[in-house]
Length: 473
Ligand code: HEC
Ligand code: HEC
Ligand SMILES: [Ca+2]
Ligand SMILES: [Ca+2]
Ligand SMILES: [Ca+2]
Image 1 (tube, helix red, strand yellow):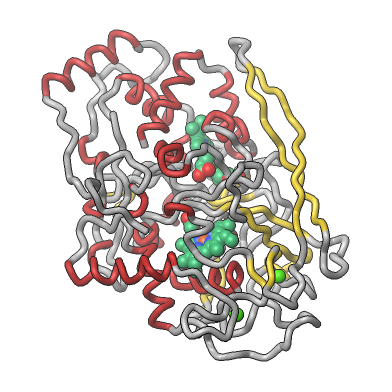
Image 2: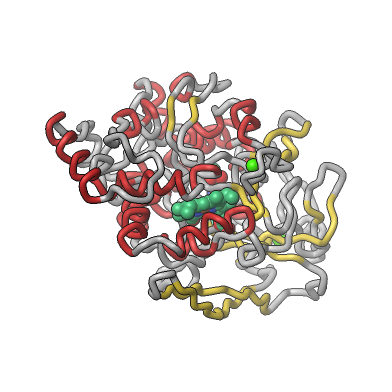
């Protein structure tokens, strides 16, 4: 649960104009070379402290991803805390008067047990693993809307747990191979490449079956991402790389089960979900075995071990909407130390190295269809919400609507510097393979290969500055 002591403070970083000028002067003095546009004294964009616009909260503590947006009305605050209880609610096997309906197949029994403190899940090799790494499944090919094809007997997701009397679908073992990389200055980094092996399948798993590993990502700020106008996202798309910079982001278009039509995908590591309502309903169904009005069939329909009946929704529409509201009404944490010379240097490198071409620093939200507090906010998410070919090293070789087996959605970077504080680990990327921020960068390939090559050529001081910038977010 949320601990409300001491952290709803709304302090604005106390930096005097003179301190800022001094910091800027030092930045210039110490770090002049290389950056093209370094002739001006770097100016701190004060507005960038409000990474989530008026929703922003300030502070650096382990519950900082669990705060309600700062601009909620008192009614919305009350709704948020009701929604918080849904996100935390632990489901149990039916029949039960409250929170019944877990399974028959599931990965976890509550939203919060994967999205721990609303941050990212632990990788399975960490001691307190709670199953927050799950596997999407499909057969090669696509359905009529471009959706992945279910595997008979397994569906679209591997559930590693089951209620009494039913067999879990299987388990996954992970093994690593190491690759050593060298920076131009001779320093080395080791990339830890996971290989996943399905074990104990309850029935034969087809040899052509595809598996895509996905770690639970942070869930704050998502209402704001939902409110970015589609046209603003499309503006950054450049599917055929017309401008020749080597980067060709493309939007995903996915099935919207409420609107019954194709819609822009925004959520999930391949942007496979169009709205937070649908993402939440899919999570209830796939991750917890809990049916809703949106997805009323149990996740093991079609399996010989299930009754194949469509039962009453185990969560009603009001609760589903409320759970989605939780992820819509969380605050974005403010960046820190933006006036630190190393952070400023890192920020310049971030754009010079081409990171900002995909991790687009800023957007202004449009009118959110339901919640005014998300509308017209200048935000700093560092994502374009587009799909990019990230090369063979990160490929899962499994498509999802318009995303192919090498493409991933640029993840937002806001709050990434708080990962250690919130989660007690620093595992990154779609399956949590990277053990720190530098490894995450060095895994980049494909459209980001040029950016990666530039990072390998940086001096140790510049590498530290780039990391200092990421840590400030
Ligand atoms: C078994 C672990 C697990 C459980 C339980 C779980 N999630 Fe997730 N969640 C994930 C994973 C993994 C992803 C990424 C999915 C993908 O890429 O397809 C995700 C993605 C999301 C996202 C999208 C985040 C983004 O940045 O795009 C939201 C929102 C979300 N989950 C909400 C929920 C809610 C609400 C619940 C409970 C009803 C829930 N989750 C339960 C693992 C879990
Ligand atoms: C071509 C687009 C592109 C470029 C250029 C790019 N990134 Fe990324 N970045 C991505 C995508 C896509 C992912 C997710 C990949 C995955 O999870 O497999 C990612 C992931 C990350 C992550 C991990 C995020 C998380 O939530 O786990 C960090 C950190 C990051 N990028 C930083 C950088 C930095 C620093 C640079 C510049 C040196 C950069 N990126 C350049 C697209 C890009
Ligand atoms: Ca159920
Ligand atoms: Ca399944
Ligand atoms: Ca381009």
